[in-house]
Image 1: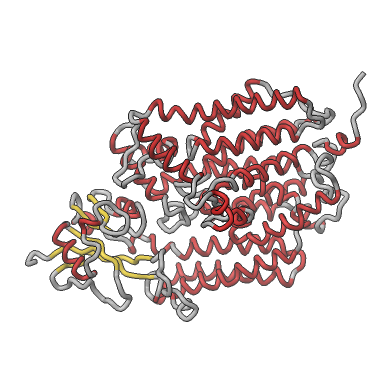
Image 2: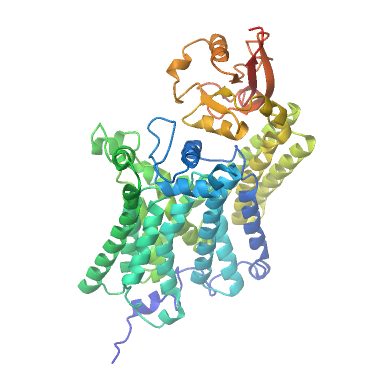
Length: 621
């Protein structure tokens, strides 16, 4: 005879009870007009997708500073005609990421035949959209209430995930966290699907996972690790182990042992897939030295001692507690309000045991990733990006319980950001960088965002949605603002590119590997960096005064790309002994202390824009 189910088991049933103790059809719902017409939320999702796609091939898309480094490795490897070993001209950067990241770019760029930023970035954004679709689907299944309410909540989860700055910055461009986020999330989505199946609704627990399931988990872990690092197997396996046990109502030794052995097999399989790199690479010793020892083991050590560094070093432990709000970006305070107030309320109304298994899976996912990445001596909010889908899901479920004050703070933050972006767009029009129509589009987007941000303070039911729309307006305004810098008229003409075809051009670098962007500008020329951390910088006289160094470079190369030192300089210092073939605007991304102050913030022409000249020596020189 089957024993009766306990009260806790009945409450925890994934389809019979509520995910959170508040929310659902018996709680106070939004007005019928809002709940019954979810199409505005669907439009908001489409707008967010449009913002992601707009300007995808732009040099000014928010990205990690290392993107050009890894594009350089992918290009050099593609030019070699071989999958391995990886190639690079930059010292100590050849094996800093696993090969799958570079193979993705090599295939997307057709081994150099269609090498463009757009082509290289498309796979990453497809990964991001796939993750967004999955988390929206499971949010829909986890939401209590009628279909419109469920659809609204799933759209909200999708919008939240796309508005997290960690997704916008690392989920669009080439060097991203999108691939590993997708692959490492698949085992957790599998567990959610398992619990949400109708056949599980009348059971205390689902059937135990078998060898095939754990093997598929291991393959997903291995593919995720092959994009970033074998170290990701640790938090992925720990989260999987905890999530599986979290679905059990009564954990016994056989269950604990079976789960531990299964997850161990998944982890070993994942590491084994990553280890194929050592088998396939002709130079495995370099892979061990450059990737395992330098890139990974180095983040577990510290010269000051672990505990001293953990509390007083450059990466103290307490900063990692803010990793999720930090990844939220403009939604920092909304995420913080959820973690501090909304989430604890769930535990006030029901115990962990009473929670639905699907909610336990999501919470374990969040907690384990945060705890694991608090351990390394080098800590970063980027390390918990693979857990951001879980945050989007649980925030959407608890959305109405986040106090309004956090949304007002968010709207207040977006307002000055929109004003500054609008001001930069206005100045670009004054400097004739932007056409009147382009400036108008930027100003319209900024004004819409400001109007929405203002509405959040006056229309009570618009507070939460308005904060999201104003955040999206910031992203859209930025994308529109940089459009004039990408126009063909703002670039070097085809005639100028033809004049330097096949020639050696000295180009600025600014940061490791940034000179790689000039391979897109002068694809038929040979570019060489002359400053910062580029190769041969010592031989190219970095200590010379700028005017003397320019003359030296002109004597060493066929052409030089030179940046305007002072906004008052109308021409390079070498004129008339040199000739300017062409020029374009350069946007400064790194500023020295004191260059940007409250006094000149309103005048971006003083600190943001400089001329970039393509210079050749005259025949008489």
